[in-house]
Image 1: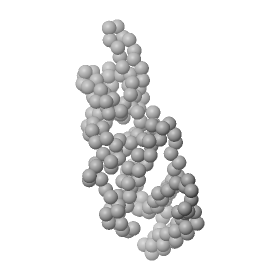
Image 2: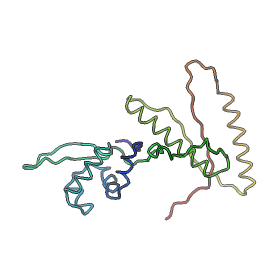
Image 3: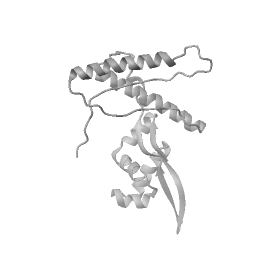
Image 4: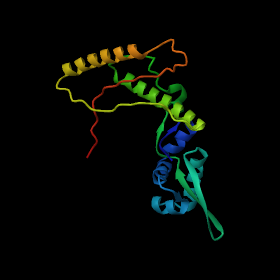
Length: 195
């Protein structure tokens, strides 16, 4: 099971967004059968089986084992990931495009960049999984508290200068066998989780 799975197919996205199927996916972080899940979610086993088959058809759950119980074979299923993110690829023609209106100070442009990041990394993960390889990535996550808007603006300017110098130092347009990498740096107000 992966920690995070990427849903790229529109039909799989639709299947995962059904409230009952979403709940079943959450329950199936640990393996379970239709019978055990029926008790947890308050549905008949047959209805749970229907939802599980739909989730399985879209690659969101997989068979872990089959157990023989009398005349019945019980199928034990597990989610293919502990959590899922829906790639903008699933939205096809309406997915955000950051090239449409680049504006370093726009929250909507930042959101379009984030969507592009989800789409690109999702595509890389899908390809890497098929090739049984890892994806070389790096990320930094942190918080900074600014005393004023002027400090935030000064920070953004200094960060821009530092990143520009670093990119200039390492970027080699003519590197034979080199591989392009995307760099995204974002600063936005922190969202506090409700207690």
